[in-house]
Amino acid sequence: MSAKMMYGVSLKGFRSALADSLLQMGEAYPNMVVVDAETGTATNVLDFRDRYPDRYVTMGIAEQAALSFAFALSRSGMIPVVPLFSCFLSHRACDQVYVQIGYANANVKMIGCYTGITTPNTGATHQCMNDIAILRSTPNIRVVECADPSELQQAIAQAMAYVGPVYIRMIRGDIPAYDHPVVPEGHRFALDKSTVLRQGTDISLVASGMMVPRALEAAEILSREGVSAEVVNMTAIKPVDEETLVATARKTGLVVTCENHNIFGGVGSAVAECLCQKCPVPMRLVGVRDQYGWSGELEDLVIMFGLTTDEILKAAHELLTIKR
Amino acid sequence: MEMPRPVYHNQSNLPVISHYHTPMTDEDLRMFALQLRRDVIEITHYSGTKSSHVGGELSSAEILAVLYGVFLNLRPQEPDWPLRDVFVMSKGHCSALLYAAMAWRGYFGRDMLWNEFNRAGGLLQEHCNMELPGVEAATGSLGMGLSNGAGYAWAAKQHQQSERRAYVLLGDGECTEGQTWEGAALCAQWKLDNLIALVDYNKYIISSTTAQVMDLEPFEARWQAYRWHVQRINGQDVTALRKAIALAVDPKTAPGLPRVIICDTKKGAGISFMEQDAIHWHAGHLDDALYQRCMKELGL
Image 1 (cartoon, one colour):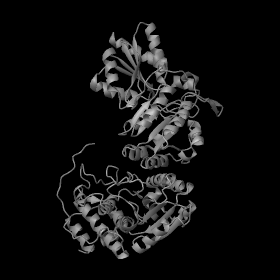
Image 2 (cartoon, helix red, strand yellow):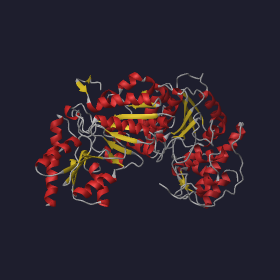
Image 3 (cartoon, one colour):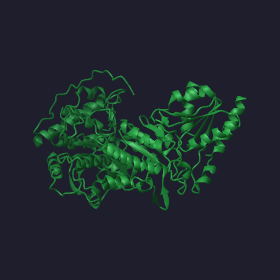
Image 4 (tube, chains in turn brown, yellow):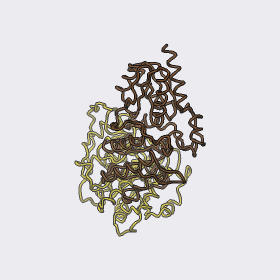
């Protein structure tokens, strides 16, 4: 992967994976077009512009137009990919996403960049805490989030092969902690499958995106305490992978969900909606507790918003007390 | 959502006075517009809710008559034919008029007009949507159509389909939406001279006159400032419409500039009591008595 600099920060991890993926997909799909709204510098999609200038188009800072425009391209023999800051995609262009992408069941690939608190130097206006809630409640749209850059690349390839609207949620990933591979080598991503990354019998930690490595770390600590924790990488947010969720809940009887998103309407809600109907078990939801974002050092924000391994452990211990 | 299609047997009892054929004279187009008006009144009367957004449909009748009667190159049996012209009804609440025009071009049988409008499971919904083949955008949430048209026109240029045109019909009310002007900027930036916007300038937004609520004037100057080729005509005059659209279609006219035709119209045009009380006829219900009164005014 290419590691270049942007505003003094090295572009590695997710953003680098996005740039490489778009180039690969651009080659595989001559009808792919990237529709931008002037977030391309930050989301790192300008390599695509430079390689395929005829298939990159920017709206200026006009997200609503971007989604409506992309819809029309999808009806003109093209596959539009729209990588935008997730807040501007899901908030500013919410109506366009609802009416012209979801309702129209348009073959548009939306990539929500900079989700949750992972754009630390911006604050509440840019830190999207409820994109999952918005996209998940829009019929027809598939919602996925990936644990590491290699999984993201698979997700983009799968989304391109699938016919219909897809929303891929990704973090700004130029943080060394997120550069490590999380999913095992040979891991096969599928749009409608979540995967068990670690087997366990006492409690399930169901995590998405940047919370997956933290859940794995929590499981490791729990194992030293004699607790066997199962870790599910919840990539399939909509539709949820019921089979995997019900299987893990049935096996352990306790579920902690972990997400870089408001616990209202996000991954925890999706898991609860599934399990309360198919296999009710005691649950705890770790995530942003109905708050707006803040600008600051990322590692401070992670603590401020409770997105830590410690929070996962705290929730797990609470549930384990119930079980005993 | 799978809903069973409704089964009704409403039928029009009115004689057909005009239909789509080619070529059409100006007199043919006037009759076609009158036919579309009658259809709109009938659709409204037979609709599951006995209503439609009738005021803005009547003001656009000549525009649709000239577009569907003369200019739109379509294959109704192959709605997604890649070389078709595209028509986006950005003022998506005026769907009944679009459905009538589509039926005359053969997209579906006219019986659907009387049996499937505003009925659960019916394919003809109050706002245009993609479940009906031949509709080019889900509209009704206003202001989106020009960005859709820009996408279609940009794609046509990319594919070097020089014969294709994208037409967008805007209401004057939705010219108060921000996204309309995002779209206007896009079209100019990419020199989409294959896009023709028509504004049904009937001077009424929902609650009052457009001028009182959010004045669009100087309207021509606004489009010119966005680097558009601008014409302003009487939108109830088929001869003027035909001439203006022909000029806009011609690539030699203002190369590189997107085209807008501002059509001065009357809300409720053709029905005197609606014209005189346009504020109350943005949308309306037509009971039997009103239906008869409308039809009388439309020559029956």
